[in-house]
Length: 468
Image (tube, rainbow, N blue to C red; front, side):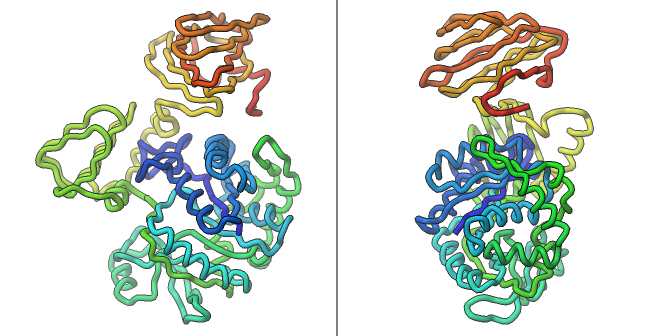
């Protein structure tokens, strides 16, 4: 079996913790593990022979690769990069085409990277049950046994039972409250989990039947594939021409071979702050508090501190989330509208919707400390053995001070070795590179000065990570 993990989402519903450049699947929002790490573990635990493949994008590729290298180095089946977002049906088609090269009958277990699932034993039993149907050519979806009349999920209407599974009688959109109550009381309706199981050849044949233009574009893109480090890049122009659609609309709602396996395993798509409040243990006042938090006369709240002390007094049913650069305060009943705040941030030309204050790069991280009209100060951390690109800037000079570790600095034609408390100066327009030759993280303070300090003022000459 091949566990195909979809990790291309931007996750704005958990803003400001989740942001476009570093969304919720890379963040430990429920346990001490990231949601992606939990998903990888979930796939590997099914069977000792199960391999993991990830589908992601250019921006997130190195974070996904680091997760797979740490957890599944000897059981990774590859990372496919989408040149553009085209929804789930084309992404899964790329995985199916890759799997079919080796084994057209390979079972693909498709899982989003940003869901919570608490009961691994129940999940494994459901997958084993679904595998029997999938081997027989069925397209399996996993329907979550509803715990309430929820209006935030699409529903699957089950039909007659056959050989241990239920035939799918139909897919229905997110209902209003009255309709959801009707589904819940009637029974036979399941939340649509977005998880699927089928043979690679069966998915491709059904895609050819119901969305032939999509399959044609995916085949053309995959035919142009190229290997780049741990990644498989498909043809950009061909993939960008691919129709955009979900697997539900493109295949599952049309095929006559869709079946549903009921799943009751503590599942959540972690789709809002209120969902996180529901997922985690609450204190005697119904509060969930993470980080440095003190409360007085507070009830029914989700309070999350990334660093600073949050002191809450006399509030009920609120969400309060503190990060380095944003504080969110919302009524718990309104958190589905967080996207409206994100839209305002975008409209104002700000960057808080895309980046955290600490920005992740394949070589490490940088974090802004201070900024003025013609200066900026950053804390830079470089992983052991990692190196920044050989580059220059047209509009700024840089001063580097090493505070921990050892640095090799390329500056023009020079190569300089710096240790703790030593520094160097990079004049405007001079080619330079920073490398950590040591076995511990290299930390330094960078002071930039100049007329323009944007991240796009970089001319790269060489780059270990094949960035443009």
